[in-house]
Length: 222
Image 1 (cartoon, rainbow, N blue to C red):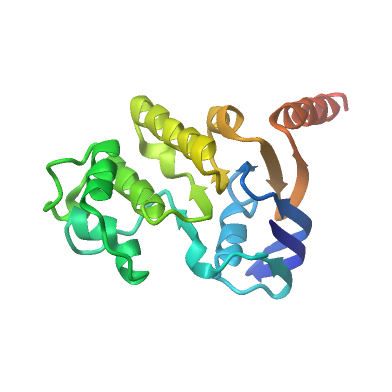
Image 2 (cartoon, rainbow, N blue to C red):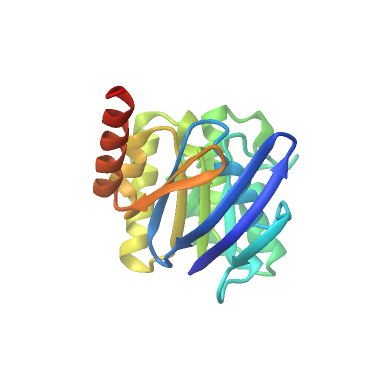
């Protein structure tokens, strides 16, 4: 379980202020909110890319090497597709198994492109490679920050199947950020809604839907 208590971070005029937030382990969580609500800032704080001004981020038994994340604009090493894919294994001193490499190349539609310069891939292909690279070392906590935004519908469905297959075999914890509600409601068991740096609501997709409808009705009743 990832437990966040009294977390604060100021960046210029923006203030993140999360009183309490829990990510239950081995569940798929959705993190929603408009641009500027603080979703990406929160992920950077949890993953250690930024330091909070104050507050507690309790990762429980997780270590930094158990956590990974993907972004909407993934960074590609100036190297081949193959070396980008195996990089997480290399830095963890794991030997890349040929069958595992082949499996992930096939899943992300990059079979035959192992020796291609990774930054030359299309935007969608870079997203797929980033996704595969994040999962190849079997992490325990994965943050997906708009990674599926530039994928075609078939690729999105394929990666949704990968996520559900992993959960059925050896479940891990996911936090999925998306502006496309279908990703969140199709996949997630818990949804956390942010606005202006604060957590507005946490609940099941159904409960979140009720909350959003009631909030919308109240806004229009004035």
